[in-house]
Image (cartoon, rainbow, N blue to C red; front, side, top):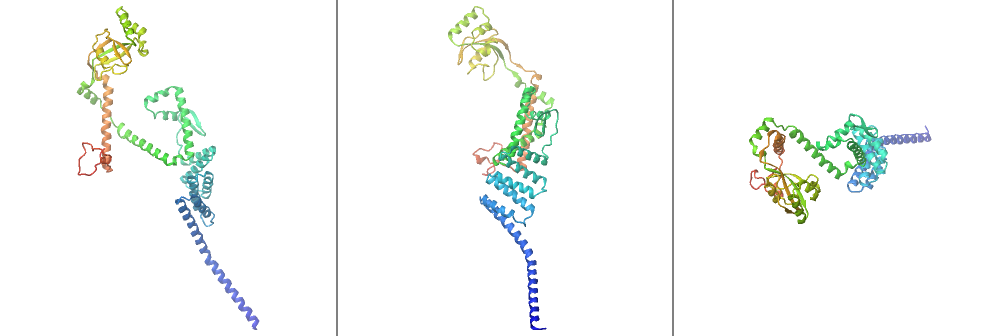
Length: 436
């Protein structure tokens, strides 16, 4: 082998070793590059979070944008980053167009999210659309979100009386809403026109509530506080209704026994049914007394002379004046105790002397008198039953409160308010005590 050939062989060996070394380097660099990509992603997201916490949303979004461009980032991670970026754009910058873009990217990257996650994303999309003035788009998006949540589970009852988009509102739904009012208020809706007007208001309220949700107002801190307060009231009232009101019962024998033992409470005092003539001057009084002395009926004289429009057409009749404190005359302005005493002293058919009061001169006539009497049991039975039921409910409520205060070790420190503790509270040194 000559020298030239030997030189060429050495060159070939050197190139082969170099190629092998390069291959090994490539193999070694591949996992190192993936690790570096992961580290870059983590650094970007950590920096973005830090900038957001420091009140620099624009810079935070710039870091999120760089992180979203990394090929090494898994799709689910990108979905989470896009969602966080959307929240920054929405809440901090009020840039709803930009926020919408981030939320749409989040949905794109997370193609098969859990139902609850997807519903939350779609609610955010609807909020952006509403803020951007795309009400129709927002309504459609929110409808999809509601479907995913399975919220609209109402079963139609009765005839369809209204609709909002594809949602039908039945007479049964309107009736259920009316039943939430007190019984006396419910009676107003027996009138078809009143019920129709209520249905219209019901629809309008639903539309406004839907708009509020599309605006995301349910997430506003102040609104959230109001909703939490309302929720507390509803929950507390429900506990009262179920644990107290529905369980408080009064036995018929209990009602009758209470009546027999407290008959003095059901004594109707002596009373006089009275009519009046209201006059505005001494001259008018003289004219009235002149007509009465001439034999005119008090009723006809009242119709022609009295200036009280409320009672004139009824011959001046006011109703009953009772002999009980405080003395008063129904329908008469100001302090009427003196007039009441004069009326109670009249005999049936007798007319009082003129009595000067703040609204003019009064003449009173006694139409009927009744002596004090005990009211029959049947007439006061509903009242007694209601009174006893309220007493039972107060006792039951107090028992529940005491049990809860003890079980939860709850206290209200009276000294903190400068208030004296209740007389029943035991004194324990100088410690502030909690009492109801």
